[in-house]
Image 1 (cartoon, one colour):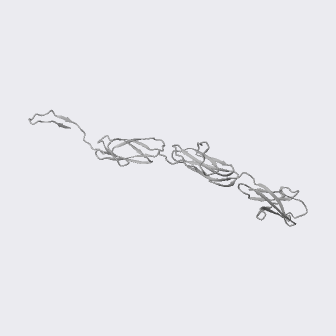
Image 2 (cartoon, rainbow, N blue to C red):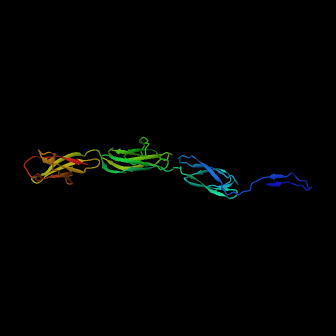
Image 3 (cartoon, one colour):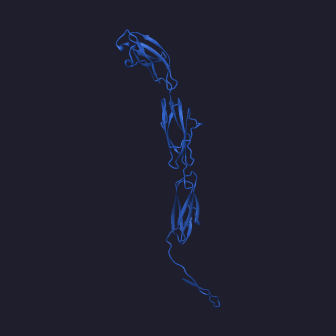
Amino acid sequence: MIQLWAADDKGNMSVPVTVYFNVGSDTTPPDATHQITPSSWTKGNVDIALKVTDSQSGVKNVTLPNGQVVTTTNINFTATNNGNYKFILVDNVGNSRDYIVTINNIDRTVPTITVNPKDSNWVQEIEVKIDILDNQSGVKYYKYAVTDSKDTPTTWSENIASVNGKLTIDTETEKYLHIIAEDNVGNITSDNVTGPYHIDKTAPTYTNWWWGEVNSSVVRLYIQATDNESGIARVTAPTSTQSGGYSNWVWFDAAWDAGANAYRADITPATFGHYGQTYLTHLYIWD
């Protein structure tokens, strides 16, 4: 308690005024609360609204994450990236506190697309597995196209709201798979291209055949065939006696004879152990 009064130069005294106050020490630093906007996933910036309080000596100043010092207690600060944002709170007697605001809801990363297999040798069809990953806002959809080139397509499938899928490529010739994915805040991948996938569903075409040398040791059969996609892989001439069935066949592989521009199968009668009868030969051509 303090009593105060005033006197003039003539000795007149005022009525005393009594002032009551508490004397104590302030050892508690300021505190704060905050809100962020938006609080859900975004690919933009995040606004931090900070309210600083000190119930004793009062707030002196606040140092913002960018180093700027302000004396206001209601503060707005913009976070441009994910991370920890430190505000230094100081009261009027020098107590200070580091107040940390963690921002982790900014997503500027496109989804990751994984395709297996990424290409293929010649097959009749192939199943391709698709996986889409986004560790932040999550996958919204993907879409695909199967084309004859690596150029970005103009026509796509419908949006597929899934993180994985399987696709069978069974259209002939050299094919490429294009995939685009988008996450839940609008980050979109570029055209993810895999391939080529080589698809051949058409059997080879037999075009001609003729007999070459024929004697007691060998009968030479010449075969011509074409395949427009994967090419000829194997030509055989299974042979048996005329009355023999499949189980009696002897498979004679034909080798390419460049001089004749044809495949040549050397059929040897000695393989059957007897002569003087009719034999039946078949043609099998694989691509």
